[in-house]
Image (tube, rainbow, N blue to C red):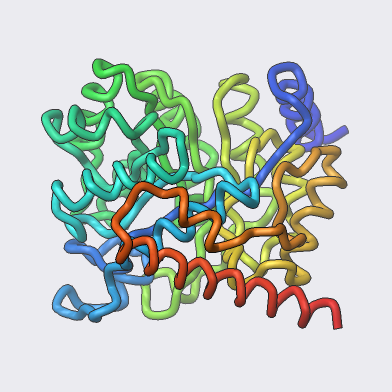
Length: 338
């Protein structure tokens, strides 16, 4: 048995010792597609100038809450609420968190950049923890990839969240130029800031970014990072980020010790061949898939919205958005069955 296969076996056994043989899809809910920074080298927004924006950059509250209803009904966990840095004011974000909690009934993770202590205190009634967009742990690579997003403010935030009793999570993108030699730096960071959850994404070479012509990381490379994390931190929650062209690697990533799956366009691609493959890959890894990406559920928009304690105008808007999403998903289901 070679070193990689031995590592994979160790990671799989470690996972089985500490977790049930299940997995699910985690939906990252975005409230905007714009950002005041726009220079993170991996992000599609870095292909645009800071002055460029669109009227639809910030989503409506109704569309977000309709998506939350879908997550609840289809068994998708909410990976986190996110959006471009400074896309919402503090008051707007606090109101949105309140409404999401009212619909979802649970606290969620928040991923919006560094947050000062006083604002964190006001978010705590509705959040379970904070995700820090660390992206890469190599200090020189970080300066290159995230020139306007230094780690220090996130580190300070993690100290505040720990003091407030919140959980800490981080995002980590492989394939940008780091090497496995950087694992020791990641290990030290996780230990120092009591990271409870880590999102391990593979680079997506977006057109117009500095990584446009960079090959995405192999499945084995992403799996090795996950396996090393699992063996070093047996009880940490690991989310493997994939894309629609990488669903075939899910079995390997789950065997490497990932808990859940993300980075998939679940509404647009509902019951698509890729969605079906996600569930098949989970089964191949001997995981029970909680929720569904392929089977339409009985969701009555009128019933779901009528019980919400919002004003009539917002409820009507939520119903319209939810109906639109359900129509898209039903159309996908019919198309894939023909």
